[in-house]
Length: 393
Image 1 (tube, one colour):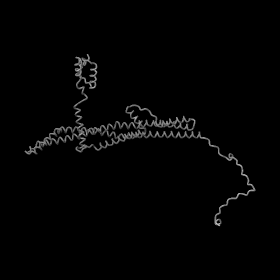
Image 2 (cartoon, rainbow, N blue to C red; image 1 turned 135 degrees about the vertical axis):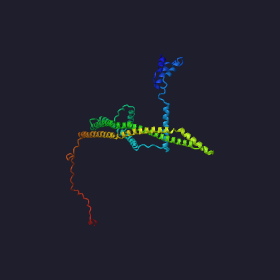
Image 3 (cartoon, helix red, strand yellow; image 1 turned 180 degrees about the vertical axis):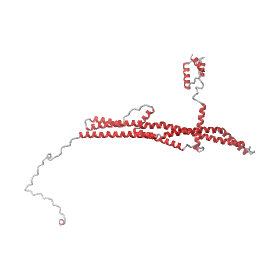
Image 4 (cartoon, rainbow, N blue to C red; image 1 turned 30 degrees about the horizontal axis):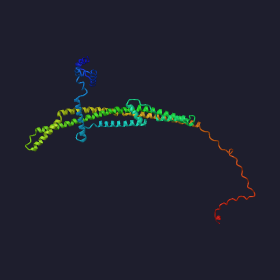
């Protein structure tokens, strides 16, 4: 019954995708394992004929593949000849060329600004790489404590270990709490800068700049097609002129050299005619490629003019970035001022009392020296040094 139902759909104009057809064939073969080895094997062959012939190669076109290969080959030949100086190159409009240069400069410097801003916000390269990988996977990166928060936790733990009642322990705890507040403010800064500054710049690089690059490459391909068509027309005209000259020229004489030269020229012209198209066909191809090139140049010019106007938006994003930094540093400054006041009050309240001053009443009383005995001669005083001429005499 299953085979008969499949056969009844033979007259319907149903187009099946190639992958669906292969899945159906495999499923049918698995469901009927004995049909290959028995008399019902012809039903499988009939089922393969039931499937439309165009469904198996609907994504594959030999003509289109050959055309694309020929276009790619002609572009490669034209590009190589231009580099070797053997073919002419169509120059772009000066204004369009300047717009392309400005767009490339804007893209490169915007990319560098993004990278350097990320370095400022997150100095750790390992964490930056982790955030990049999670962003590529479209998953939220795990939260990591900042350096200020780690320092604050370390100070708080040290203060509790050393004694929260001691002056040093109190100061450590207060400093640790302030460092943690600075870490939270820094986290808010990173979030604000990411949303208001980095995200618009990334959108510009990933979307606008890539669109311009894509259109620029397409314009370059159109330019190569145009130059290849010009070269093809030039060769066709040259071959046609030589062919006409050979047909109108009289037969050479009986000299062997003249006959050989004529045959060589004839074979050369035949070779050129074989590898070149007709003049009318080459002219039609040239007109078509010229229209495609002009259309693509206009599209690229409009996109580049839109890219040039985005600098005003980037200026507003930069202003938001500066305002976020100003608020961050002002908040951190206020935290430090408050911490300084608190430390001053703690140190003044816990200051040790000064030692008692030394007075005469506290000094020990020494006994007076005894008087000189009268029976002893007084001690002779040392002679004073004499100066002047009397001492010399």
